[in-house]
Amino acid sequence: MRRIAILTAGGDTPALNATIHGAVERANQLEIEVYGIVKGFGGMIDSRVPHVRLNPLYSTIPELDPRLGGTLLGASRTYIDPAKTDELKQVMQRLSKLELEGLICIGGDGTISGMQPLTEYFPCVLAPKTIDNDLGLNYLDECNAWRRVTTPDGRTDYVYECDREELELGEIINFAVPGYATAVFVVAQSISRIRTTAESHRRIAIVEVMGRHSGYIALGSAYGQPDIILLPESRMDLDHVEARVRELYDMQKHVVIAIGEGVEDDQGNMLGAESFSVDPAGNVRLSGAAEALKAMLCERLGDEFFISRRRDMKATSAIFTRKVGHTQRGGRPIQFDRFYASQLGGKAVDLINEGRNNEIATLQWSDSRGFYVDSIHANKMCDRWNHIHARRLHPSFYDSHRMQPSKLGRAFLKTIFDNAIGSDDVEHILNTAFSPSNLNNRYQSMNVDVHKRMQFLD
Ligand code: F6P
Image 1 (tube, rainbow, N blue to C red):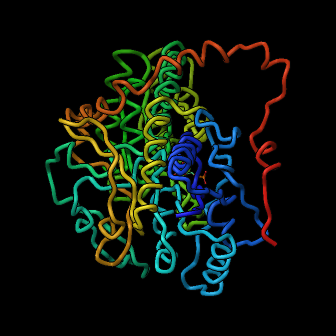
Image 2 (cartoon, rainbow, N blue to C red):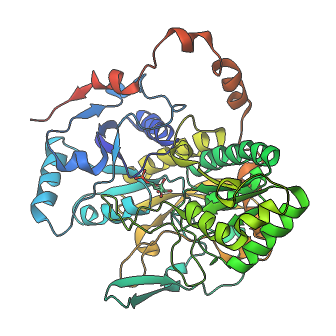
């Protein structure tokens, strides 16, 4: 194999450069040239978008730094529409003009779905990334747990009905996806910081975390010790939440609640999807779960609750919400993400070099081996209607009565996080947080440096 391309699709994560770096380093060993396609699939469709040679003379360009968050290739949520044959033709022309023999897509569940039309004509493999940790399966034939339904308004929808009560951690396909560990690190830090202000001012803090319909980030928020954790996979029982809030508030004079953005009420309505706006990939934009819960608690508790406890505050100011937001996706990846992202990038190169197509590099875990890289064919992730779903957190990971991770959920988290931070992560904070050079120098964007290496086809 002489030349391949790589692109980053979907939302960014902190470990994308680490994955690209791992892929390029492996390609150097195998003497394969790597071209970076700029702006994800958007860059494949639009021939005016340039590409970058990532390893001229099989030596990695210095701009590619695995410790930097984001992606030096840029990303987009644009995917190839299989119905638009001219679009597909254009992409094929581009691949052939660049004399490419394979493509590595770095992405999540949206990317693997978006990659499918291309795999009919061209060898493609996926190196996984997503802060949501929702690319994978809890166990091998989990795709059969999806049922297709028609909604009352005539739309087709898919419903997950988990058919397994118990799970062994070693059964999980793609245990932890690069980006997840860093996102949990940021969330845990945010929650502990909000804690002390809620504690001092006797307030109720509701902190919203990302993850769409999967509660992995919310589960990981447990490291910040929120009093209540609410996940999308477990419909919220408002009576139970209210009773626990009252009990905790009377005991400790403040409460911290972590809520996943995709949390549903007891009828299955998403708290945060009031607006129903969608991103370019067709995903419903979720925003407002924390605000919706705040409104419910304000109504249930009322001003009286706070006044009777001698708080000089109305419910609307005693209860406050914060979103951790895009800081979950940004910044330097912690050691766990850096290390395994680069291994998975290397694995993706091996897969394409071995002639595999439509294969996904995965990070596996077993009791005897610890973490190791492997792969799975994308077909194994498809349900019988050929649809790839975001993985849901297995019900056995969550204790809905305590509203905290279950014993198995804690074991899952410990497997990833016990050694997730390296001493260099700590040193990095020591060396950079208040470095005088931050005051003297402007931020040096990798976009500026990499732009000088851009090459145009037409
Ligand atoms: O899938 C990653 C993710 O960060 C989700 O957790 C979140 O819902 C979404 O992307 C936000 O996307 P955007 O940056 O397009 O608003």
